[in-house]
Amino acid sequence: MANINDKNLKLAVQKQGRLTDETLEFLRKSGLEFESYKQRLLASCRNFPLEIIYVRDDDIPDYVASGTVDLGILGQNILNEESPKIKKLLNLRYGFCSLTVAVPKESEIKDIKELKGKTIATSYPESTKRFFKENNIPVEVVNISGSVEIAPALGVAQAIVDLTSTGSTLVLNDLRALTKVYDSEAVLITNEKTLKNHKKDLLEKLIMRFKGVLSAKDYKYVMMNAPEKVLPKIKKIIPGLKSPTVSSLATKGWFSIQTVIKEDMFWETIEKLKNVGASGIIVLPIEKMII
Ligand code: ATP
Ligand code: ZN
Image (cartoon, rainbow, N blue to C red):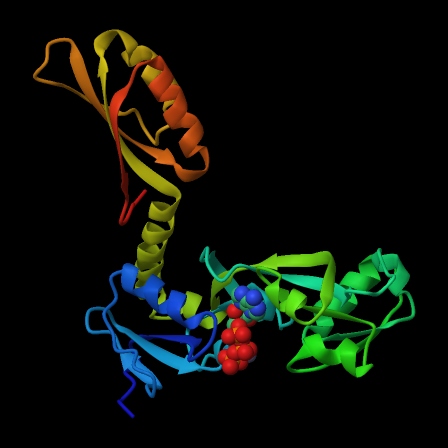
């Protein structure tokens, strides 16, 4: 195994699983260059003092809490089961899923209240117990580490609490969702030690890079042309970061306008711009945005 430089930041990521591809893609988008072939357990970044350690996602909270590594990327769902020694730094906007309560498709249960006194199988016992306690529904919770979906068919439980994203795993196992316990996504975590020690400055640099990628994802760069008389209307519509850039075109009385638009208001804004007379609208993805 390669040597670990103690001055470098250490980041634990999932070695092989649902978060792996998107995590590596996110790190690369942040400008980090590193190896990631299958057998690899450790990789040093070529252009940033960072070591990437590939592990099982369940081990990441312990590695971070004990200070074995400085940072980790894992699902919020795992964090919700764990010790408060860990500090969340960022939501990473991928790995979306929900912890869901489900019953067999043909079950008569329509409401979670009807689960009173029943047995629930899950790999998320803490979240499950908390959820039913908050809802004042006494249930029996059995902890199963894998293949929770088959527990009802085996007669081990009358309902399950498990992660879903599209719901296709539930359908495949003849299960029906009753309600959601919480939503989850990939998060970046650290520990108190790293936030205070000599690696603090490096961590800030890395976070700035990560935030640059995250903000870029939320915005689009938009260019358009418009005659002078509609410029005031356009400026009112564009809820840009600052005021838009306006420059005159070769055709007299016409201007080119450049700005950024938030993804969630995108279509609404573009329609309004068209309606007031903007034309030649060009939309570009933003690679990075430092605000
Ligand atoms: P490991 O071998 O590392 O322990 P695992 O089997 O525990 O892996 P995966 O199934 O690879 O874990 O899921 C990793 C994470 O991906 C989950 O903890 C969750 O945050 C996220 N995720 C996203 N969508 C889903 C989904 N549909 N089902 C389960 N997890 C999902
Ligand atoms: Zn796991």
